[in-house]
Each structure stands twice: as structure tokens, then as C-alpha cells.
Length: 257
Length: 213
Image 1 (spheres, rainbow over the protein chains, first blue to last red):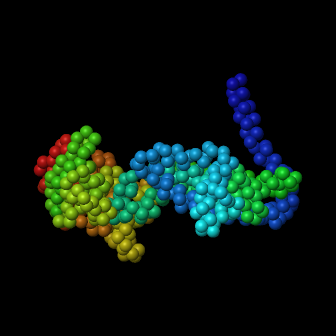
Image 2: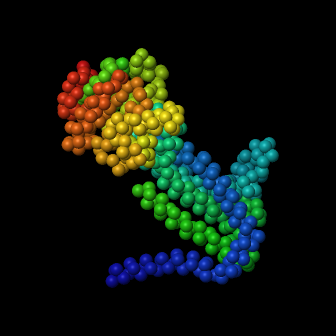
Image 3: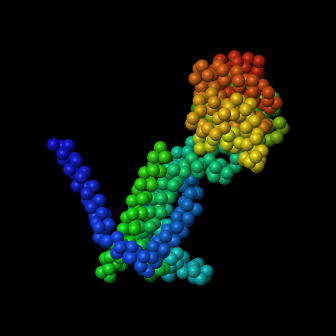
């Protein structure tokens, strides 16, 4: 009896996830999907999403890797606080994150005098899209990288040092390769979060076609303008990417063990 | 010659050591947890003494202010569990120290292969450490430590990770290899069989942080 209840509850919940996502694929005929996905507005959104997530991933790796290493290995006052701060963007509502970015980088934000002096405008530009993605996505990478670096036994770094390898060389040739499965898994998750970014982007970057209108924003605008087919086509692309990522993450997880 | 006169606060006692290790093998003995490994790590530069002086052939490595980092000391270290890089082949493990010193690919691998042959493990060049037996790992660790001609060699319980039957054989091999070296070699052990195997070598005893020759 209990067994039946458990199986039933599991089946219901799985269906709750799979059926709606599957319905996206059923919404459009293959011909119609191809026509929509290759239409100029869809292509503009695809291109923008691809380029901005590539840029935010590069920044995530560049800025997140040293921080993750310091959090894993460093002993300094406030380490626990820094650790918690990194996790905040995962929990903070994305719209709030967008508002916070506006308060600092917006036209009248704290950084406005400095940005004006450099003749740089960030809010409602493609750069703002990248910053919003970095803000919400990077913590996923940093968390994974922190765990990955933490699991590299120090004796390998010590061994490299006694063999004459300086800290940077040891990091590149020993620490990073040994933590690679975790780093790659974290990078994939961060990129996926950036690709799906909506709330912070629309607050901080807006929805200018070709400039700040990424795929998730185009999906939303399709709904409000009544063009559900374009939304559906882009949604299929996003869900397919998500599927690939979930499978890839499993593969990395297996290799990390 | 390695000369030490150092103090280092450990968890439950203070390690105080004034000791010199001449060329050739010196056996450093004492029960577990008395500071043997800390002494080795201090010579290697992996641990910084609280006070005192460490020199190698007259070169100051530590003197309270100056601290030469491990990677600039040219002091080789064979770790207890060997610490072979699991993501590199045996050949790349052995060539690692040469690569760190900027020795080019061709020459680097030629030297590394010579060492593999010398220790009878040339057939393992392409293998990963995971696939090796304990005795084979030991030899790779030794080849990796010696391939770049260090100025001193430190071995921390080099036979402890081996099963008893391999241990006796490997002891003989290692003793033979070490006898060819013209640099200070410090071998740490708490095993009486190891001490017996190196019976001709000078012995330094250490207990609760105190050193005696």
C-alpha cells in the first residue's frame, strides 16, 4: 500500500516536470519551428544570448577562479563572511539583483561620476546584460570551484614546489588539472544560469532588440505581444540546451568521483 | 651539508633541533609524532621555523628574516605516500622537475628515460600512477626526485606505504641508489628494520622535539 503511494507520488511529480516541458516541443511543427527560429528577431536574440553568455563566462572564470582558490585555501579574517557573500546572488531574487546593479551602475548610481568621467554608460547596454549574467551566474562556478580546489590534496602542491615549480606554475599544471571536473561542472552551471537570466537583465539592461533582448526576454515579450509561436520556438532552444547541460553535468560528476 | 638550528612550535610541544647532515645517507629515527616530518619539511622549505637558521652547503635558506621558498631550494623530497601526480604519466612525473627548470622537451624526456631505465621501470613510461604497484610507485617517486640532480634528498618513511614482502626488496634497491649520491640524504623512519638496513649510516634520534646524534 505504502509502496503504491510512493510510486504514485513519484510518477505524478515526474509527469508534472516532463509534461509541460514536453508540450513546448509539441507546440510547433518542425517546419514552423525552423522558420521561426531562423527569423530575424529570433536570430538576433540567439546571437545576443550567445555572445553575452560567452563574455560573462569569460569574466566568471577570470574573476571567480582566484576567489574560489582563496576561499578554498586561504585563512584570513572574514573568510566565512566572504564565503556567504558569494552565495548571496543565488538566493537574492534576480529582480532585486537588477535593482541593486542599477543603484550602483545606473545613470544616477554610485559609480555614475566615475563612469561619466570615462564617458562610459552601462545601464541598458549590452555590457549591462553581461554584468547581470555575471552577478547571478558566477556564484554557481565559484561554489563548485571552491569545493574542487578544496578537494585537491595539498601534498601534490607541496610535491610540485619541492620539484622547483613556482606557485603559478603549480596552480596551472597541478591544482587546476586535478580540480578540472569540478571547475568544468561549475562553469557549465554558471553559463546555464546566465543563459536563462531574466529578472536582473530586464531591470538593469531593459529589452532593446539586438542590444539587450536576450532569449529569455524575447520569450517573455512574445507572450505580452501575443506572438506565442516565437516564444515557443525560442523556448524549445532553451529547453534543449538545458537538457544537454543536465546530461553533461552528470558526466562531469561521474568523472569527478 | 645541511645545518639546522631551529625552533618550531608544534601542537603539543616545541621542536628544538640543532643538527647537521653531511653528504651521504643519515637515518633520522624516533617514534611517530615527535617532529621528524616537521624537521624534513623545514629543510624543504614547506614549513617555516619560528626562529633559527637553515643552511645548505653554506647557502642560507632560513634565518628568521629570509625564507627561501621550497621551489627555489633544489631540495628533493620523497613523500610518504609518494604524491605522484595522478593526472600525469610516469614519464611526465619524472620530467616534472626538469620542466620546472626550463629544460626543453627532447632533453627533458631523454634524461627522464635514463632514470626510468636506471631504476628498471622504463616499460612504465606511459602508465599512470594509479596503475602501478607500491614498489613501482616508490621507484617513480625516487626517479622524479633525482632526475633534476637536487642538492639534497629527503625521504619521509619511504617504505611505510609498501607491503612487507616488497619492503625488504625495495630497501635494498633504494640503499643501492642512495649510495651513488654525492649530496646530503636524510631518511626518516620509525621502523627498526629500516635502521638495520642502513646500519653503516650515521643515525640521528629525535624524541619529543629533542634531537640527539
